Image (cartoon, rainbow, N blue to C red; front, side, top):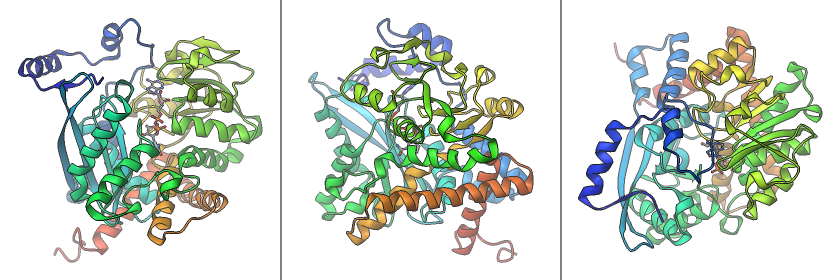
Length: 462
Ligand code: NAD
């Protein structure tokens, strides 16, 4: 059962007072952890919103973006917050909060995932929505940026409760959605099943509309290749960068933080290229083996309900020590803020491929720059998901299905183009990839916003 708010006055008061006095630092969370809860690597105190704003402002400074134009992108276009009261299996009503935030739609319908996590709040969703605006622009798919989320913990919910939350959430946000308005997709703790429920609920009001969400099951007009796309895109980005770094995928050792959808697919595809996974973590622990951990077998083990620590022939390690495992490539694919000021210096990788959104805080980014770590930032590295979501949407609008090879080839073309656009710009201007990617993204969005008249051009305002 969900560990959230029940609708009693006493509990609400307790929540408020606890919130005012809670120290959210990693140390505090550590001491408050229940004895039987697995140890997890902690997140930094800097929020995802601070992280995205910092990177946006840095690029905006570099391109001398006018202050009045910047302000347009500091805040989202539209924010919807809804209450989701659900009677759960304990017989009580629990009230969850749901968010859909549309950051900018200058380049097309809003696009972005739906996250289910107890720590989801309005600021986190704002941050992720704006990141989507820049990501869709860097990948050059005709979408704007949005994100959604519900502050629930699926690990404590039954499937029936999860379905009720999903349907109720869709009922309450459907007015701002639509195949030409805003198209959700899966993110942390949501999957093809959740998308199927969302599509079905939307269909009750609007008729069968597969293009309302992407990341659907194949039986409901999902796209071949979508489930693996974000992880595959990360690998394609690494493959583009490898030659200039003197690396060959076949002799690469890599580490994955967060063996979920993105992390496990990135690991399985890296392994197909001959690379070897030497350490990996998820919310239940971390393991290592210098001689390699079979990503396919680990995926099967976890899918069958096994714990990561119970996998064969591995050494269990403290999740905080994962970052210090020697490797060529480190792939963060869990939550934001996990590469922090206090652990970035321990990293031993040559390349960081950001599968997760906002995994690296600005202070950690600076440390990695000084260490000469090659960072392929989230805003391009994990764009594979939204690229294949775009392909799924196109297929849905035509009620047509491409074969998997076609999807993967087109994904490779899009990722290669994004990598070359950004790395070319980085070279021209003497910047890191992150700043160059933001520059490319911001320019494309500002150009579209001006051209369609959403913001005035300098000449028309005089
Ligand atoms: P997921 O829920 O499938 O996987 C998340 C994984 O992280 C799980 O294995 C979980 O156990 C693990 N995890 C959670 N807390 C952890 C901790 N403290 N330490 C180590 N592992 C931890 O989610 P996902 O869809 O794979 O998303 C992962 C990241 O990738 C997120 O940041 C998400 O925003 C980003 N992303 C996802 C997509 C997509 O298409 N799914 C696209 C772009 C970006």
